[in-house]
Image (cartoon, rainbow, N blue to C red; front, side):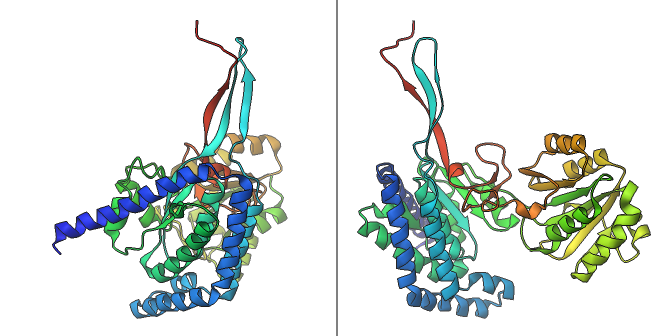
Amino acid sequence: MGIKEMDIKLKEFVTGKAMDARAGARDLLRAGTDKKNLLLIKMARALLSGTEELIKENARDLEAARGKGLSKAMTDRLTLNEKRIKEMACGLEEVAALPDPVGEVLHLRQRPNGMQVGRMRVPIGVIGIIYEARPNVTADATALCLKAGNAVVLRGGSEAINSNRAIVSILRQEAKKEGFHEGIINFIDIPEREAVIEMLKLEGLIDLIIPRGGEGLIRAVVENSRIPVLKHYKGVCHVFVDRDADPLMAREICLNAKVQRPGTCNAMETMLVDEEIAQGFLPVVLKAMEEKGVAVKGDKKTMDIYPGAQEASEEDYYKEYLDLILNVRVVAGMDEAMEHIAKYGSSHSDSIVTMNYEKAMRFLREVDSAAVFVNASTRLNDGGQFGLGAEIGISTDKIHARGPMGLEELTCTKFIVLGSGQIRQ
């Protein structure tokens, strides 16, 4: 088969998956809440029943990963065991228990001519999910999309292709048993990058793309997509410790934001400290950081106060370390702190620690991030922590969805008009 013929076959394959999903999305529109919930519960049970098969297929991926010399962290993310399969099943059941946003009517108002105008929450349609080596995303993303009435086209990383294929097979079988169109769940099981490129061209078949992974993956998706993309490139998150902060509270918040789970997008990467309290605060908190294994980088003022700090470069302040490395900068006050956040931040999660109400309210108004905190850790930027239930990711976009994306964020609204014979004069 020639290269051109292979390209045509690949394009036909990917387009066929999206067309199948489109048909499935129409079928989902007819499904009520009870039917969707029952499907998710049956899928959860099927995953548990298929544990042995899932572990067997996952072992093939793990063997290939070891052969490629993948890192220990990557291999861990790839691994499925009984505990993780139970967690996937529990995730499906938890989504089934969440309120269904589809059909909710918002802001119904009566106009002077007697007609009522409102908005109804409806599914987006077909959502494409592009992700890396975590097979649990296959089940999690499917559950959220289906509950919100969307068909899903999944494209997982090649490292997990056997695991993902097995999970999707189980989920599709249950969909068929429950009378759903199998196209509500589709999986592009072609490892070549060209499959993703073709997927991103399918404007009109796929309504929204959500990439989950590192900055490189997300930028590649955005650069090649003709379809709207919900994204965040990286989490360069800040905590500003104001001169009016409670020092004990500030210490605990900063430690939690950095060390509780440093490899996440909502972990603090830079700590900004008001110069009025830096002399007393920095030695205490940075000693505690170093005891937790944190390497400290700072500006000249920080290094003068805490000689254990290394010098931070201009480039360091833009970095998402995802590691036990912390930038520290001493600032003249809140204005300089907010200027720093505006210049170096990624509009993800930023926090102020202060007992001054006016400063807190100003920080909330003026810091332009998806989540802004007062006297709380940035690590709390999470769908579960915010009461959304499960989430499909965190968006730093400003259109449609911003912050943790739960079920409501996987819907859009349409105007509805209830009349009694009104016409336009």
